[in-house]
Image 1 (cartoon, one colour):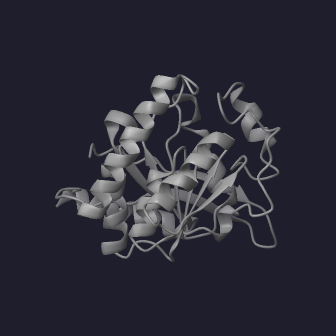
Image 2 (tube, rainbow, N blue to C red):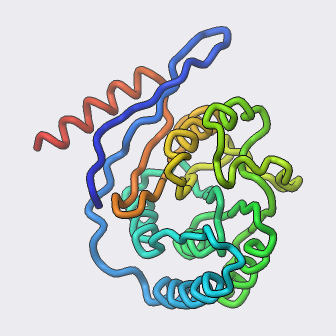
Length: 237
């Protein structure tokens, strides 16, 4: 994994006691070794289904993440006990391999996807591998986020706000680990949405193509400063 520079974003939260809520980087161990044979089988099947989907050209902009790398990152999160709980949600899950992987690793996993056909295929993938995962059709963008979307102008998928999430929508503040593969023009938006809506202590895992994965946590301001000092100390060792 390419080690990304520390870049902490913060947003003021107004209330009786004003505070600064920040999203800070969390160091992951080296993502080496192999994933389990069960996960390898799942990934192989998912790759074949995705190749067929790409050949069909029904979703010309569809680009999958590196499922094995994401699996290793999720394994590290569980092995290092980094998450505050077991609730996992992928924002824009596509055919659902990452959600299925999270389920196999012990997470209570859900995926949200705006394309109904992809939701149906994700459910089929999970069923074919006897994996208990939930897939929800709709937008993962919580209500009250329109100004964040409008700020960027045009986001290829997130601008489709006419497809609301179902009544089973998973609120970010009820999720312990959020995963997303942001488009280039969503690099700032995804952390902003997470910063605004996730609960304190929640983790944001993002995939960035050749730059690998990045893990961040939402913490109060004082903890953010301590976390930053700890991360600098680790890098100096």
